[in-house]
Image (tube, rainbow, N blue to C red):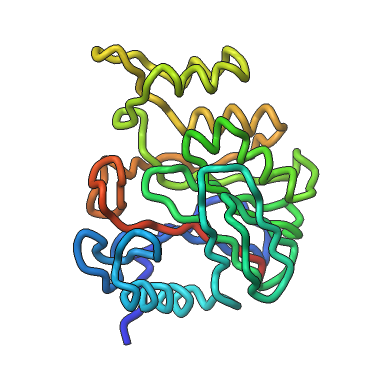
Length: 249
C-alpha cells in the first residue's frame, strides 16, 4: 500500500539534539477527496472518516512512529497536555509536551502557526498550536513553561502559517497584542481598508524572545500563498489540516 514520500513532508532544519525527531505534513500524499485533498489529518472537518484513518496510518508508517500521535481537540486556548506514556484520553488543549520517550506530540493547522520545541539536552519536547487568539492569550508561554527546561536551552521551530500579506485583521486583534507592550506594533501594517496586515511569526518570535527563547528557526512559509502544498482555511474555507509532530525516539 502507498505511503507518504519525502516530498510530502517538511523536515525541520534546526539543530535538534540526537534522539529528537520532527516533521510537518503537506497536503499531498493521501487519499482524501476534495476539498480535503489529499492528505488531511483532521477528523473534525467533515472529511470521510475512513480517509482520515488511512492518512493517519500512512503518517505512522512513513515516520515509523513509536505510537500513534496524541491528537488534540484544539480550542484556541492555552491549556497544555502533558504526555506521560501510553496513549490516554486528553482534555481539550492547544499544546502538548512530554519527557517520555515514544510519546508523539502533534498539532493540526491550516493557517495558524505550529511551533515545535525541544530542550537542547533532548529531555523534553513539545508542540503548540498558535492562532492569533492562543498566541495573544499565552499558549507559547504555557508550552515553554511546561517543558520544565532552562529557557536559554530551549529550541523552537516555526512551521508554515498564513503570511502577513494574506492575514488581514481588525483593530481588536492589534489591541490584544499591544496590551502586552508596544513592541507588538511592528507586526501590524495598516492597509487601505482601514484594517491591519498581521505577521504571526513576528509576534511569536517576540513572545519567545521575551521568555528568553532565542534559538528560533523556520517561519518562512505562507500557507495561503502556496495552494499546491498547504491547506489554508482563510483561502479555501472547507479544507483539511496539516500536522506538526515531534517526539523522542
